[in-house]
Amino acid sequence: MTASAPRHALISGASVAGPVVAYWLRRAGWRVTIVERASHIRNGGYPIDVRGTAAEVTQRMGVYDQIKDARLTRTVSQVIRPNGRKLIKVALNDIIAGVNTIDVELARGELTQILYDVTVGDVEYVFNDSIASIVEVTEGVHVTFVNADPQTFDVVIGADGIHSTTRRLAFGDESQYIHHLGPCVAIYNLSNSAIEPGKGYIYTQPGKSLSVRRSTAGPARVFAAFVVDDPSAIDVDDVKAASRTMKEIYRGAKWPLASGLVEAVETADELYFDTVSQIKMATWSRGRIGLVGDAAFAPSFLSGQGTSIAILGGYVLATELQATTDVSAALNAYETRLRSFIEKNQALAIRKKSNVLPRDAKSLRQRNRRFVTVPILKRLGLMRTLSGDVREASNELSIADYGLGR
Image (cartoon, rainbow, N blue to C red; front, side):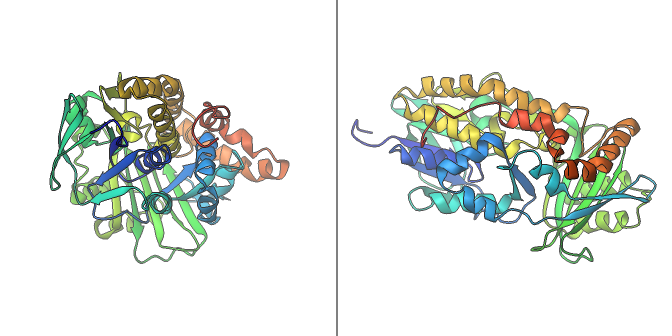
């Protein structure tokens, strides 16, 4: 590497945080390579939210209008009591939109495609490959790959998810950093479904929830979350084990549709099955190697903030890297600016007032009462009161006078 050559960043992971870092580093004159284990950008996927300051980042990137256009259409879900009887119909989109008018709910695959499209023109993407080894040397970070030839980079960024290979190679075994919160989650599409477009169901018993929603476009999507005795004993790569576990958990459910939705997991399209966990690390960097997104600070889906903090984390990381030639100092500055924001958002996942998975009968009754008040709050313009903690956390870190592209 010569002094006149542009600095070269390697990013592992082509989902959300990785392309955000790549976009801003290219804008700052860096050369960027993204290596991705999968053969292509993953389409489809479960609904995610872009909220608060993260939405502002996408505005600076010029992709917010595309994100807004991909917003999931309004679906009205019938809430089912534990005894199988109907309670009330709610539109979860209304609850999300009531938090902040800039917030958007869309399919994860729609967002990853938008981020890919805005970066592919000047970022080198390498699919079907992954990092095999990482060694810091005098001139940078020497990396070997499973398939490609070795290279040396100025910085290596792990944006490769909660089960990050980069983190394992540079920081040690995952067991040191993963914190299981108790539940497991299964998300999958139904290839054949009688669920009408724009409709859905939410069936919840204490410690377990089963819902299905179908937007006006695309298949119906099942979302199952349930508490297990020992999350660490779950083999998340074993589909048959997932099916057995779900059948046991939901056996005896009073809602007639429950058994069919659970049976469908065995032949499901694009199954996502994992423990509900957080990543907590004392530091997100070591020398010229840094982590971002779920690899560094996964908040779990219970927070509702995983995508948003990945976007904002990627933006802050790129901003600090372009501000100095000292990569280690930049990575430290990124962590200093972001740490308290991340901790506040991770705390959302362990709050007792959960709409997704009430753990006991009292919490479920309180959740159902909140759902019953939705029509009234909507008429009074008070929907923001339902998610004040999420609104506060998503806007905790301001970029009004900070960062690239302002």
